[in-house]
Image (cartoon, rainbow, N blue to C red; front, side, top):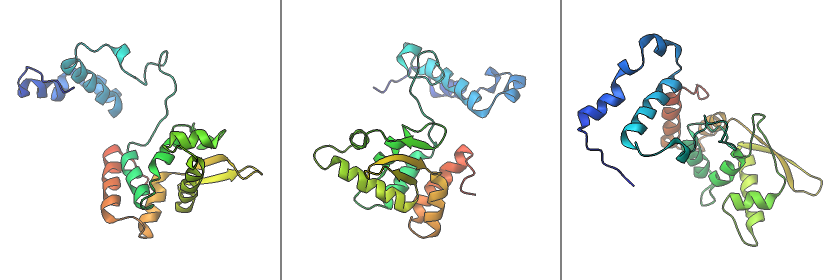
Amino acid sequence: MVKRHPQPFAELSQVILDSKEIPMTKKKDMSYAQQRTEKEIKLRNQFWPEVKEDELWLRTDKENTKGFTTIPRGMPQISQAMDYCSKNKPLSAVYFALWCRVYDSGVVTIENQRDLAYESGFSGQRAESTWVSRMKRLVELGFVEIHKKPSGDIDFVLIKNPYKVIKRLYADKEISQAIYDALYIRAEQVGATDLD
């Protein structure tokens, strides 16, 4: 639900822009993310004062928040690029399901392909075979590498740096200028240097 706040825009913009809220000496010691978080907490308190922190899913609440992963801030653009490379057979849901299972090693252990197929949005008799075909395409494009059990099922997946994969795909003219530019701009906004 969109909430309208009764204060005039000028007063609200002051909440966003007022740098006096964080003392300059403290600002120098804070990372950009910390400064931004402080400003956004002020915004949250301004626009949604009735919402309590226990109603939110906050990664910083280590006592109560479990089961999170780190994803690139350019993931929407990365998803768009991989789907562009696989016409009418989107890959991004498969890739995102993998990403939600990866830890800091880059390796995903696949205990049950059917579970991954379901998490990727596939159901029915062909769910697993559809998932396997999308995984094959992710391998062909270079987003992942796989290791198979002797039975032929995938047991491990290595997730490669998607920015670097897309940079190569762009050089090979497999990704449009517009899609690459969108990712490049987002990477610049978040300080990612993978495309340099």
